[in-house]
Amino acid sequence: MELWPGAWTVLLLLSLLLLFLLPALWVCSPSAKYFFKMAFYNGWILFLAVLAIPVCAVRGRNVENMKILRLMLLHIKYLYGIRVEVRGAHHFPPSQPYVVVSNHQSSLDLLGMMEVLPGRCVPIAKRELLWAGSAGLACWLAGVIFIDRKRTGDAISVMSEVAQTLLTQDVRVWVFPEGTRNHNGSMLPFKRGAFHLAVQAQVPIVPIVMSSYQDFYCKKERRFTSGEGSEQIQGRCQVRVLPPVPTEGLTPDDVPALADRVRHSMLTIFREISTDGRGGGDYLKKPGGMGEAPL
Image 1 (cartoon, rainbow, N blue to C red):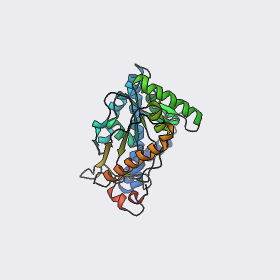
Image 2: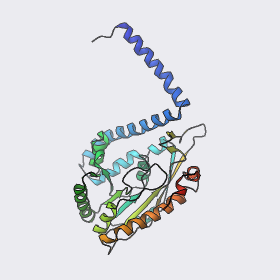
Image 3: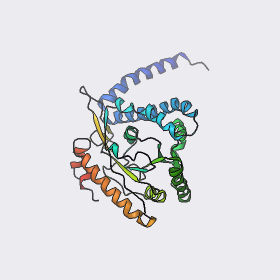
Image 4: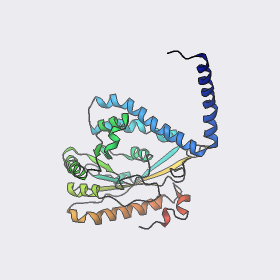
């Protein structure tokens, strides 16, 4: 089907309008800038996943493929002017399985995770991610463990299998025990699945805390300001690895107290590293900010 001559004129005018409108929105609208940045962030990850799939497919589904994904994603922090500082990496047990638990703020957590991800470690993710196009397939090839949180019986069954995999295949798993992203600058109550898993397998829990992003990123305010301006404002995120928490000798009855103790230690560190000039300091001082949240 051929376009009539007037249609080409309309298309040309629309293209010129977009060329002028998009830069204007970028300069004048922080909300538009937020959406542009997040759209590129997600689109770039999907594109990188397309590149990773044929490389990972050589091995098939294998936790070693996580190294390939990590290598391909590490550069993203530079695109957004985000500085990720890791402390306490020496706390990772050198030669045994363990369960990593980390706070969950946004999709930007991926940057901190890739910066500190130990060898043979895969995340436990919600099953919906499996259907996220190229990213879902790349994650499956990298050994990411998917659970259906709506079907409790299936989730428990998967966790039991994971406990066996930890011990027989020397695998570590990364869990976000809050269960969902928390944009409020604190930590939600922890779900206990990760702690049951660690107790069942009798392996240590390694808590990891990422500082608040509120200095440069806030979903509610549609604000994402890192990497901007003539001086390239740099977003800072500190990732703190805490000493491992042993679970030897613990039983399922000990899980509630274990989860509360780990959350308390993580929240204490979160407050410390989010108010020392490395992210979230101004936000945490505001009325209603995380600094006023109860334990």
